[in-house]
Amino acid sequence: MRLVLAALALAAVAHAQFVNFGLSCSNISLVGTGPTEELEATCGNGSGGNAGAQVIPLSTCLTNQNGKLGCQVNGNAMNSCSGCALSNTTVLTCSCSPVSGPAVLTSFDLNTCIGNINGRLFC
Ligand SMILES: *[C@@H]1O[C@H](CO)[C@@H](O)[C@H](O)[C@H]1NC(C)=O
Ligand SMILES: *[C@@H]1O[C@H](CO)[C@@H](O)[C@H](O)[C@H]1NC(C)=O
Ligand SMILES: *[C@@H]1O[C@H](CO)[C@@H](O)[C@H](O)[C@H]1NC(C)=O
Image (cartoon, rainbow, N blue to C red; front, side, top):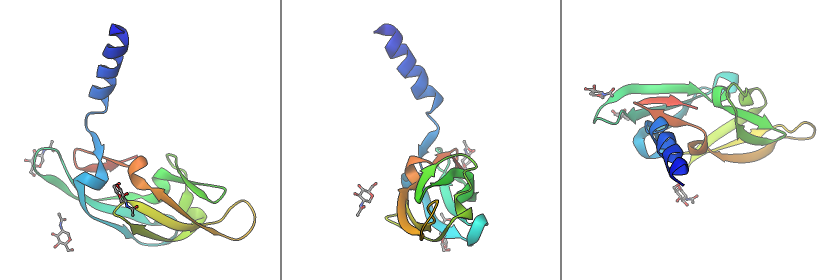
């Protein structure tokens, strides 16, 4: 039990600075189109300031798994997804091509994949 608690405490420390970007960032928007489309946001740095507007390419964080968006570093989702829009602050909806057949609309909460570390966006 003590070991488990110690492990949980270590895990909490290790992830202490990776915070919910939907709650800690403002001006969350999409920039550009196609393979280089990016997420832009201005994120709190945890001590009352920010590091200015940050951008992270959607393809750096997301993959298209047979028509569904998923979280994967350098997943290149935007090679096969388009027409993306944000709703409810962090929910990305795109039209993504499955392995075969027409593109399908799919939604993914970016908060499950992207976080804010000291005012910068990471996935
Ligand atoms: C958000 O965007 C608006 C309009 O572009 C700008 O005036 C404001 O300074 C921005 N806020 C932050 C925190 O970047
Ligand atoms: C956060 O931003 C403020 C204001 O720009 C700055 O003084 C502070 O050093 C920053 N803190 C971190 C951890 O970057
Ligand atoms: C919007 O996001 C909030 C926070 O994640 C969630 O509680 C709420 O259910 C969402 N609303 C809709 C309409 O999806």
